[in-house]
Image 1: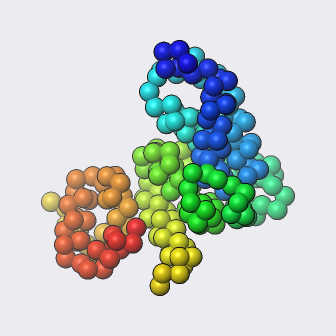
Image 2: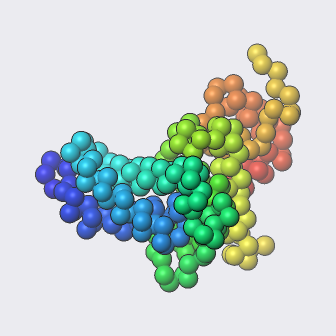
Length: 169
Length: 47
């Protein structure tokens, strides 16, 4: 790494798992996450020329997020491109506990994956990619009041799912 | 000063409150409500 700017090879080697983690949390399934990482690495390669040393993980997370949002918008415009069994909402299968390691506990990742996409996406964008509500509203094309509501309800749903799984009640 | 009726003040604002996403008027209104309402305080714990 020269002057804090990594080479593309270094990013691919050292941050591939990080990119996958962010992608998986957004997409909720392995196949889409893999596609997101591949596309993100292409953008990383182009973007490294302009990258100024700072928070590399934050920069990478934003790239993955933008790839994801572009794909969401693309699917909305051309629903025929969506997966054949997609009813318009992505409901990902829960992975086996030993299949995926995303830096979150298995329980949290499973609960996150089970959220409907319209709740999971704003929660992940806020808590993982560190977007402001305004940025989430602009990126996803929903009003900010809806973003607020979905983040709140999404977090409550996560909490409820984790409490049930913990059997604490 | 805006008169906040209950219907415009929604517990779903609590995530926004925790994330620092509310404007000054909204924050004041939420904090006032929290001081008054055990239900709101319970909701805050939940998020």
